[in-house]
Length: 237
Image (cartoon, rainbow, N blue to C red; front, side, top):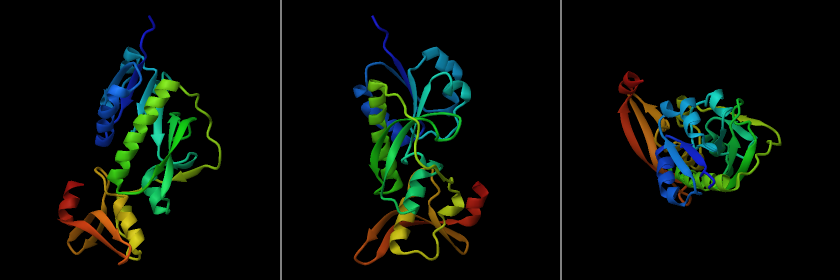
């Protein structure tokens, strides 16, 4: 009897964890493992369970070479690679006026986002960052299932390389000169847990914004706002 393959999914984001639990009963036959703590990803674990693939939906840390060289590690990047290598792909795309993108599944190599690509799937950038990440999580699980079932051979990236810089918290400040559409995009693209929200400073207060809605007829934006004393923010940082 052929032994069932083993797969490992490593992710920490709540939207990915929920998506994995939803699709787990429908994933290809095999032994599926989940880790949701960076400290649990060790070469000892890899050698113990010997996974066919390790999948990394929305993983924020560099994976050690001894792991990527031992097993096929598959990560997911929300651009049409090699366009948009680098950090903050969703925010960088929206800030540049893109309304859709591709999610690329690629093999991890030492150079960031430079590995060969297993497959790409089209994806809309509409909605808040939370809504976008939730939909990407569902799509990523579909891609994981397809890769596990078909074992495609990854192909080298082709085309001009465009690098996205990782955004800094200071870039979440709302520009003083912006139109309603740009303001809406700025707020919505940052509206997700663990991301620094859109803000403006007003005297001793920091005003942070979320749940943006665009009224095209009135050329206006409505949003929820939270007032926090800036000195308290500094004390926590």
